[in-house]
Structures are given as structure tokens and as C-alpha cells.
Length: 112
Image (cartoon, rainbow, N blue to C red; front, side):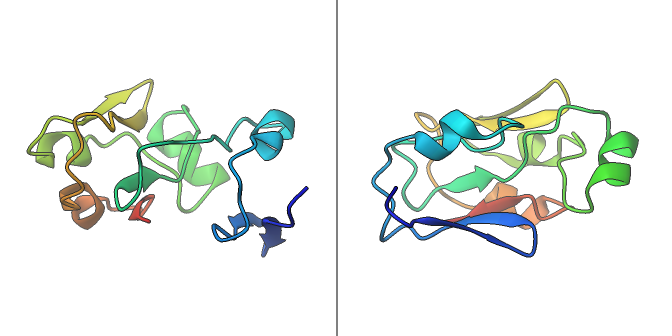
């Protein structure tokens, strides 16, 4: 409703200057890949919601999380856990150091 979301090359892109965090986009997303996050400014985000195993993910998406656990092993604050083949960040523990961003082989973890 605020013209904050557009589809660019098949990917939902958010204009954070226009986003109010109302959650309307997350509520209607048919695949559940859009979520509203708070307390995440300047912290990494996982741009994937696929819980399939690595080989299946790569068949569906070139940039999907393959559950390799490199991010979990690298995180100095133990803020990332890979569960169900997908990385999840605990923002209460995350310091925003970006170590996970550097080691992600699929570049699915990005610093906002």
C-alpha cells in the first residue's frame, strides 16, 4: 500500500525508505519468503527460505541456501544456526560483524 515493493527480474525488492513495516507483503506472499524483521539494522540477513537439501535447492535457485553450515561455523557470537537446511540468524546475539556474509558460498547472506 506504500509503493515500497516492486518485482525486479523476478525478485521482490523493497524500497526501505517507503516501507512502513506494515506486514502486508509478508501476509500475502504465497511462498512465505517475505518476513518483517525488527532489530536488524546493519546486520546480515538470509535471503532464502528454502528448506530443501543443497542439491534440490540448486536445481530450483542459483542463489539459495544450501545448508553448508559455513556461516554457523564462522560466526564468533554463535548467532547463526542451520536448521532444516537453512541458516537462521538470532538478532539478539548478532553483532553485525559480517563474517557470515564473507563465507557464504551462495551469497545468500547479505549485509543490509
